[in-house]
Length: 91
Image (cartoon, rainbow, N blue to C red; front, side, top):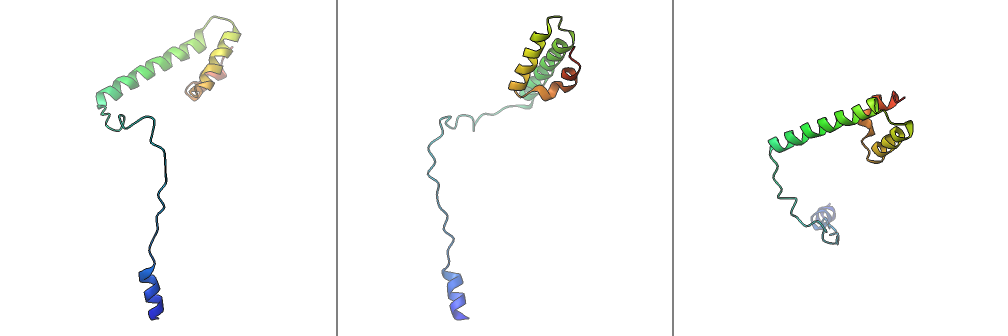
């Protein structure tokens, strides 16, 4: 019994330290302070741009190849999920 208590007290947790290289970005973004009004203006701008893209998909009078190129671009940018309904109804 005493041996078990001795073993439990002697056992230490050893944490290995990782040897990561320093970040190329530095720490300038860690102190970046953004206000809610800035986020609100960005949100409004994003919504406005989304409406423009939806309009391009629905009312764009150019040929089908250009619409397909636009859809391909949206997929490559990984934002096509915002326009799923419009993409489904492309003529």
